[in-house]
Image 1 (cartoon, helix red, strand yellow):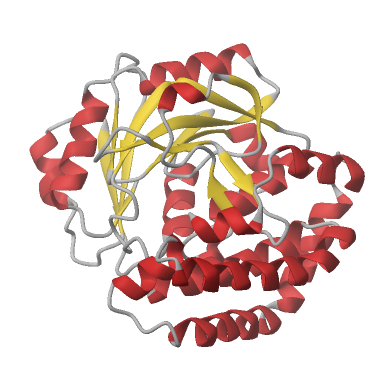
Image 2 (cartoon, rainbow, N blue to C red; image 1 turned 45 degrees about the vertical axis):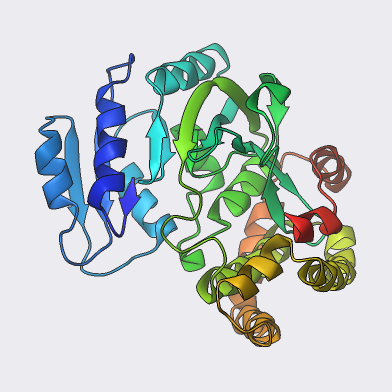
Length: 330
């Protein structure tokens, strides 16, 4: 559980973990504040199962989670946002599903919005340009039954099998924030590991509590890491189509902005100038070009060890797809 602001949100999260019906687990809080802000909430929790890894500065989400995973010997590893509250049966439901399905490497929770009880995510979907969105975001939770197959979980509340991580790799630490779960999920699928949606594993999430629902930082990292992800994971056919799909998404962002909905409108209503968005997109592309040699090395490693054909991978993404128009509208 990485934390930056700590405070009441972290305290609520820790209390929810102390109330779990499944008890054979430890909690690792990774304090990214650089100021030991997690110390007080952890001390107040007074639980022997909680330990802290304190970083001198913000190491990012992926690095923090990897630190916790590598410091543990557990065969099952859960990631939970510090602004999430887990229902008492959350962990029990995930572990039960993992024990019953040893060939499944990823398990998605039913993540609800804390303010109104609608879904934040019931696993994730992906668009043809590599943009991802939460399946069922804003919809009633009972719309999505437990599923024998999902694409990958939202990293806000997910369970991963260590055997899968050892094979497919851990979170990519160069992402810093956002889309780490997308990249890991696609790499795991290439390696032959499945994902399941566990509707009984319920957690409530304060959506984008740390970085804000629509901020320049989020806009930049989301766009940059989308590019990182498609270079690493998309087959050649999809990679060639991605720029055209991205252009279509930019167009629909403009339309959504005019209609005052979607992330572009959120960005504008938060007080940011819309003229900043093209600059952030160009900056994201420039960063991707600078990192291209490393990304291509990662791509070769993924494709050299893949268990799926490109056609099978494309079919999988098509089964769990979302249109770029929908991405812009959400």
